[in-house]
Length: 400
Length: 170
Image 1 (cartoon, rainbow over the protein chains, first blue to last red):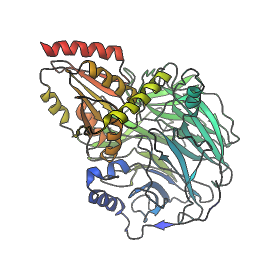
Image 2: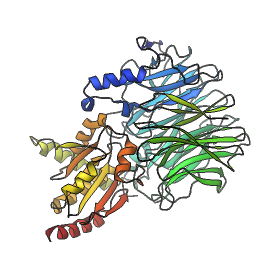
Image 3: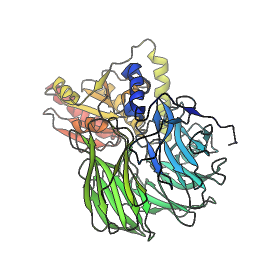
Image 4: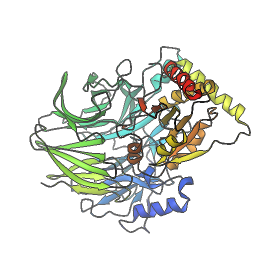
């Protein structure tokens, strides 16, 4: 990847708050069913607070990847800045969406998966802004491998040293095994790449683990020493789609793969349902994940420890889905969505004692389509970011 | 895991090749819009008869193997109704059509999720279905359903269809 002139495209005609409705109108004007885009397929969004409390969101606007900012914690949003010069098709997988991460010097990093012609294939695409979100670099491919195969479900984190780490699901080992007439390769693999120069170039591709599930998001959490722990849905032999974690290091080394969920979900299917992972001040890992194993269906929470879990509990009811979580000191907040037959409800659990005891909160509901929620922290507060058809880029602040 | 065996790849390529060669002037199958009331309508259309409803998606790789198994067995048991529903949002209609055109579907009905939220559509089918694909429902003549997540076993499905065909003849 090379340094190239920066460019910018600003959708200046749109007033704040009118972004989604304009996108909708466009989709409807194109004839609804035959249109390339409708709101439902374009709700995938991701957000992060910077150190000054500005909230940044990566989302789709009229088919483009776009970044919007909010100076009032989501009450109002700036005009979106388009990251892509032309409308950018993005992966259709249920767990795929554009991602945003912020660097220590105000850098804004965005990744997404660009689908290629063959089904289930893609490229992990990256763009950055070094001028506070006014302009973005032309999109570049993160990985060296350029086969028309699966490189999908990108995840991005900026580590404690400011290095940019992107991980993704990759099928090169499956393809290589088939070409070598070796025994069939189980699932996909997790690979990663590292940038030491604020996203100007990436080095890799480093393998983190063999035998991941094919279509679930990867959770990444950074540690003080610059390493990162990843959690993903794994395929334990022969077809058990439970979860694993492994530590990755910025020099490309990968630690051992450790199993952390034990529902024993044996299935040859795409769950489209990845985990979330955070680390607290005592360096304990807290995770949420989904399983549909018999008697275990639903969202699970636990603290992860060697050889097992502790403080394990179920989250929400029978239709609970797509949970996320965050920590602040001893406090933990989990948010998820849950369909009650009429509406999709946004619900949350809060613990003030590191996951031992919990209180539940209702944060909202929508009758229409909605994205997965994200739990974010800024200052001393927890926020839940939820992009819905009815209320684009909405933010709920948890009561103290 | 047998999902990605070389044999599967070969069959996939063969099926793809045959469809390109054999499709010719054949008209595209009707792709109906599946809403929260569609399953009730489908049940009514097949009142008193066993039938299979199989949900799949263009973004689900195991669904490709499921599709091959279902299309293959449909040729042996053409009298048992099979309904394929793409759990893909309306913008992916062309991708759904492309995917379906790779298979010889005979009298299999094809549907695709409509504008309602995914959660609502899934809930209308079965509130315990979390969205994993493929997901199949085997309805007996009394329309009691057995649900299955993941690629269906070809032998099991063959036996079920044989039994269902006998029931249908009675």
